[in-house]
Image (tube, rainbow, N blue to C red; front, side, top):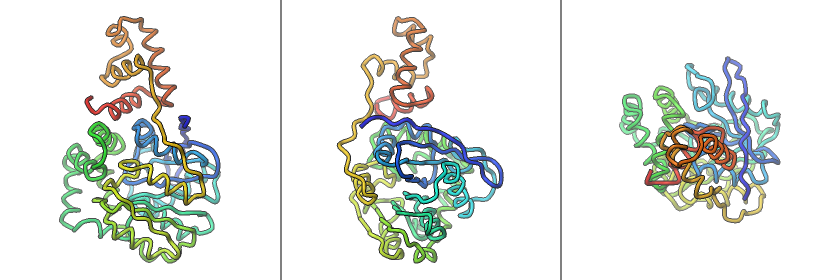
Length: 343
């Protein structure tokens, strides 16, 4: 499968500021309503996440976005509400010129996508909900929720490590390490706490019966972040919804058996199955240069290390960036660390 290029844009919000969105692929629009935190640039550099989104981009124009205050979006200091979540979807869809869309919401985004589908039935053609819940109160007990919120607030580094182990237990060590860094890059501790508190507070049970779009609910049986009973409750509350319970423990859809998730989503959307996705590769020399970029070396330092000119080192880095479809050295570094657990 050919690598896709992520095209970035911004969408203004009514209250001021803007949110960043990324577009890949072509065809009808499939909007991804994200989970807890996101960072479009760095997410594109994590091999497993990129392969997952590229697979969904084949036959669809895949649109993803960073919430206000997250990733590439403008800072945000206001309250975190369902109303803001729905306004963000409206702003992104208006920016890309979409009217009727397919929605793929996962984790916190599943609750938001379901609420959007209930309030805008004319705008939603199909709805996929992965790893979601009907009530945030069902995510652990009150003591555990307060413990997690307190840990993130006082020690964001330790908190991101803990949640990475919870969200992606099936990922390799390198990917888990970069996922923890990714969360810290995507958000401040205050924003992370506010969004997780929103996840715990949302209750969409009263809206489910108003969803009329064909709906697929996916949930991994061993998901430790969102109990499978909540996936069952989502499907039971939405008229005509199909429920597929999948094996695995990872809460993040791109981790673990991501191909099984992709196959279910593509089949539901009427898209043909894909042949096995192969990660974009580099030549041995390019891998060597990528390793040095990941170590934080400048082009001059890379040149000295490899015995080449600085111009040659700069050319190597540029070819790596273009081959992987990246915009920055930071993305190259994150990609390499996620691929190489020993780094």
